[in-house]
Length: 293
Ligand SMILES: [Zn+2]
Image (tube, rainbow, N blue to C red; front, side, top):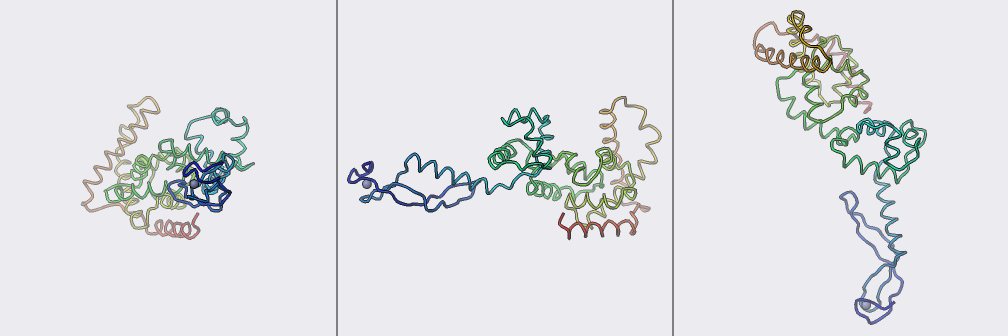
């Protein structure tokens, strides 16, 4: 074929390289077959050569996306609120396929891995729930604000979950806790020292709270809890009739108690979590960090 740039010569086969943009990063594809003009140096690709380049680019892109784990795939489906067969239909895959990936029976294929990664990137707030690096970044942004405030352990967890858009069940799964237990902790309905140290440490590890701020959160929780236990018995149960109303009421009662506790924070007789409990939590927290779980 004659050169469409200079019309002086026929193209001859050659090699070239191309820079491609993959997930915002530049990568160079080398040793690519092409057609080149011996007179002006113009480069062109035949249809077959273009397909080869596409293949190389896609292979590189697949390779750059870590394979989604069974836990991540399950979290995504729960996040989307879909049943297995519903999601399989939407992804145009066999009815049992997604379930097999979720159960870890087979690995997700590279092409579906890329498709699902693209999906995660497009669905609002999916990334923070599924991709660890996004979750860590969101938690650290939230911590910069929350840990500077007067806040109890329970209210911290509620606010951190709300502001990062994490699903409570993602927190529960990471910490090994039932959703109802998490709600009780959020509402400071349980004395901090009654939370098993392992769970307190796992929550702190998950939310990237260092020991000193953690101690402060737990002490505030102890004060809110003490204040609540003196008033709750009087009226808390009588005014709500459904679970949703009860949840709203429980969280607003806690928020009010927290405000009161803050106002009294300069007064003597403040509650403190025992050194013994804190030492246990600190040990477990250090173990978790060393293990890098
Ligand atoms: Zn030419």
